[in-house]
Length: 338
Image (cartoon, rainbow, N blue to C red):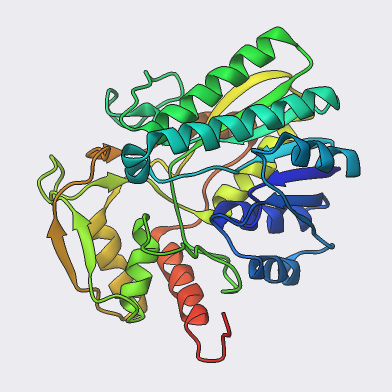
């Protein structure tokens, strides 16, 4: 099967491409390099069983999207492309609506024109907001706290309407929780441009001396230690979940929503202490004000994915921290030219 992976040089996309290639899928990656780097292609190629096709294209440009579908016939699409910072989206909502919704609509139109009707969409647990006590099931009420989450929910609603309008569509919506870690080889991992928005790359950059200390946003949440609690999931478990969802669509039409998480919640300080213990590195930190759009506690009820996809997160917090640090140490080696 030939799979189009949008945003395939990004953090989750790159790990998923490796997982797909090593399980017999031919991957075509489309990425505008806004949140990634062309050097990632060489890195994922080293880990992949077969050549990875890459096209630098912007999905906001309809003509560029059409060109991709003219060059390749796809069996399915995995859609990662988009902006992803809840905090940034609060400051610049219009950019998030234009980018995330515009790219998705252009992609769906071209898929429909070319009769490619299998789609795995990477959504987010952000759509649950703070209305539901964890663990959160797929049928929980949605509650939007920031424009990023709103774009994800709006895309989900578009996909639901699309599948209702045409029963030939097979769509899997994956609401993943908090991916961290890296490929166990240390070859690929999370590499944000500028100041990290996510917790783990901030921790690793402090550990390597690239930053002086970690900012912890709030210690007054109603949690055991006052810091936010999240469902941290290893990025390779998440990548495997996309593979399982793709296989699922071969025999299931319609629109299907799945949580991808471990079902366990750990606080920010839990993660910091675990990182320090398993890697033998001290992480200095300071407490600062809460960020807009953050919630106190969020972790998944992943039983539906285990029951229907045959998927379950396998890696624990120790492995997530070890792999993330291995990747960071590789990044900061003096021999690295980038």
